[in-house]
Amino acid sequence: MSPNGDTLFDARRRIDRPPHRRRVGLVFQDSQLFPHLSVEHNLLYGFNLLSPGDRRFALTQILDLLDIGHLLQRRPRHLSGGERQRVALGRTLLASPRLLLLLLDKHRWRRWTKAASSRSCRSCAGCEMNCACRCCTSVTPSTRFCT
Image (cartoon, rainbow, N blue to C red; front, side):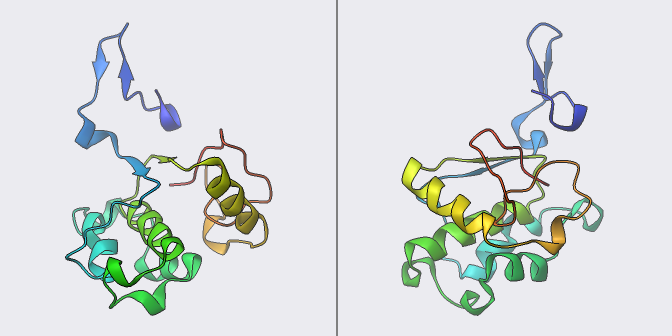
């Protein structure tokens, strides 16, 4: 596995970067938000662990991209399923992963990609990888995501 040419794991060459240094983002179908934290604190969880130079997105970019700015003070139990999913995606993107994996069922994938093709994204200009953050015109299950 080599996102952007940086090998994370190769058994033959005995390369095995520790998981916490791989910077792989994973969004589960059930969102896995911290129930005791507000949306804002969920979003900033991984973001605050990064040095400012390693941050690829600003909070305001993700709030605008995913249309979740009005949810900042809510707790996860007061969010709809779609809102929880967008917050989980936002939290993962703010952690600046090199590779983004989404675990979605087929129905949710179709809904998500339909929404993606209906919008354009200003923040993805210049990405080295294809972006599927509600901004691509063609998204397939094998699409690589921007970081």
